[in-house]
Amino acid sequence: MMSAVLNATDVRKDWGHFIDTVVRVRPQFVKRNRDRFAAVSIEHLRFLLSGYCFKMEYQQEDDGTFTGTLDVFDIAANAPTVEELKRELAKEAVEYANEYMEEFQLYFNAPNRKHHAPYVLNVLIQDDLEGVVGLLDA
Image 1 (cartoon, helix red, strand yellow):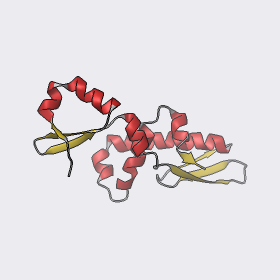
Image 2: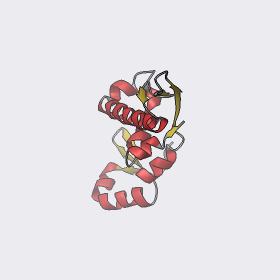
Image 3: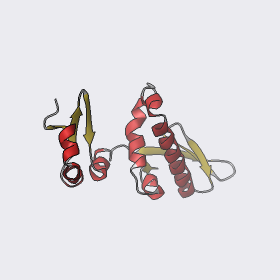
Image 4: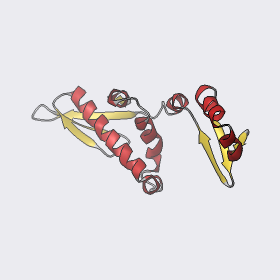
């Protein structure tokens, strides 16, 4: 049971205070009719999602390049070096995360993709590609 659930009408009346509280103090829960949702700052969300990282598996090919995959998303890439492979996989992860959000209802309701949601959010809240690369633990 959610305690301290705010009424949406009250939130609208003092929107600025609501945002200040969410960003600087704590997450907030809001109810509008039957609908309930949580508002959380990016800083808090980063902490909550910090465990949702990727394990990169890779192998060196006969031509000297490296091919790798991520353990959660069904993506693969190939690059001349391991560092470049990480960047390529990070780019692919961003592309997949954007696609997931574009078709959220479809992906979230698919049994084999539902568990991707926290990873998708963690990818999307990174400030840049280097942040996504940092989620890869080779």
